[in-house]
Length: 80
Image (cartoon, rainbow, N blue to C red; front, side, top):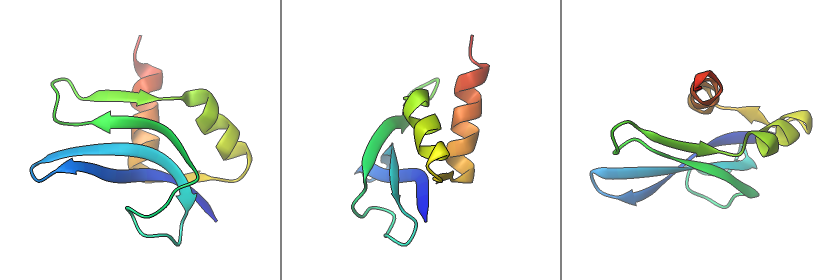
């Protein structure tokens, strides 16, 4: 089963996340199929950049977004 989720990057105390498509059985920071964007919570306000077209394509193919990714997508859609 495919999953759209975050994978952690960055160093200690400075997290940076990529939004990726991966097999749900792979480890959090394991290999992935495609990078869809990123999320940087350390900036104020938090920096979110996700390719919504690619997300829609992957969801049509059966990929399920994690709860966190779903909330990030909602935040992007609400932004003017």
